[in-house]
Image (tube, rainbow, N blue to C red):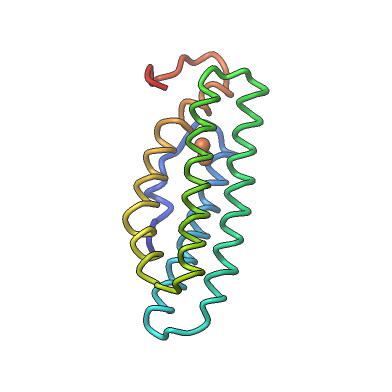
Length: 145
Ligand SMILES: [Fe+2]
Ligand SMILES: [Fe+2]
């Protein structure tokens, strides 16, 4: 397992926590498939299918947060959306690189060195502040957002 449920920072909106849990489940499943491919060197399409599911889930995850921000007129919307767009573009770039090269190290390094750290810091900063704003009344805890 790459990321345990206990490692996911909790925010004040449960619909967001639920989505983050689903996200981690997909990430862990892909990581298992990466390790299997590394050992057996066959069926790269298994990874492709899972990765496409992950992109679809992520688009849905990000869009839902963005709609909530627009509806609650959150001032940090452009910054949060910018970060979503950047990460989604990177996710697509890594997928394309993997499909072109079939070099499993491209994916392995990305999943070990980028994804867990990004998810943790994104949830504990931008998502946490967004969740508090949706909840109403609380001031953003991060002035730089
Ligand atoms: Fe999120
Ligand atoms: Fe987010």
